[in-house]
Amino acid sequence: MVRSRLSGGRKGNMLLDSITVIVVLIVFGIVLFLSYMVLDDWNTEVQADNETFSEAARNLTADEHSAFPNYWDSLFITILVFLWVAAVVASFFIDSHPIFFIISVVAFIFIIIASGYMSNAFMELAEDSSITSVSQEFPKVLWVFDNLVVIIMVYGLSIGLSLYAKVRAG
Image (cartoon, rainbow, N blue to C red):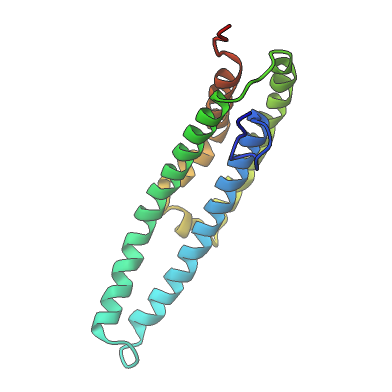
């Protein structure tokens, strides 16, 4: 029997995979914001210190500072897509009994509600006055969290279809 890699080797589960994606996205988003805040402070210090840092070091730091948001913002979307594809493919290879469909749907409703709360909490963090200037540098991350409920619905429905809508041969 094939096991889902996203849910830690347990049998494929759209609920656990959905929760895993929500947690990974939130942690990754917060780490992005904090990393950019540190890089922003470092860049400010390097640019202000002409005696310690050479012109090449200041240029390199400025280049990294300007490239960081676009690179990591795009990587965030790439991770989201790869997690979705991996979960759908892993779910397709799992034998699932239709009786679990009703249980999964009821539990998935709670996941959707929880994703709404998590989305609101993340957006509150992103709109905090001390982080707003940093969070605005990551428009794709903000878009994902602004639409997290819809994304999780599509994610869960596609995994559910992959799990339960297979044609059984024999």
